[in-house]
Length: 217
Image 1 (cartoon, rainbow, N blue to C red):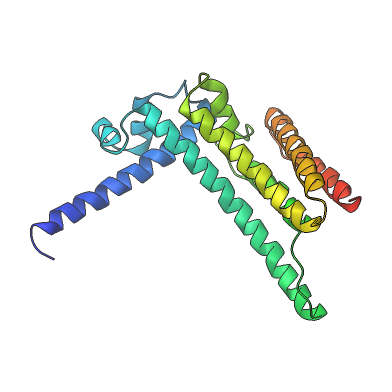
Image 2 (image 1 turned 135 degrees about the vertical axis):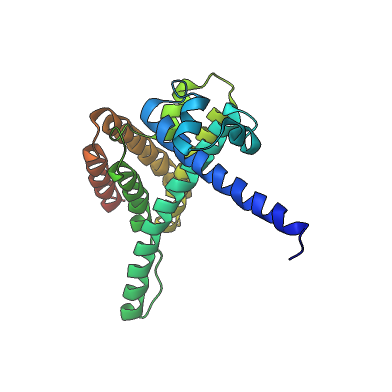
């Protein structure tokens, strides 16, 4: 590596580290205290970086908020993918014993509910406060780009439910979509109540309701 490229590489590494720390600090503070109540000074102090580092990585607080929302979306997808992988591994083992291939179907639907329960079970500084995305959206004005990010996240969750239900009901696509919407409403209602109560009990109840509904399809 030449002397001219080495300093640039080191700066890039340091900047990336600062961005990671800033986003992690914003994630903690936005969830615990709210977006509006959390200032730039609070975030940079918690991240242990200079204020200029924030503006080297994000154009503004609004840009940081969007990055936070994207990160929460990816975080939830990670929880869902881990749950789905567990279901798929179990199904593959079952297929091996049966000598046939089956999709995950209803188990995939329940993996979505389990991912929300995993979110509620995470350790939070001031306890579980519900969906971090919806909490942030409630603070943002109509038309704000962040609200669009949250809307797309909720649509993605419903699409995942619909995909698993279409696998379960291959000859009834309209019913699959209608049930997906029903379950999305059940999930969001349970999440709102769980956030108010500071515990995941309502999500456990919602999962049981979803499982009972799937058994009747």
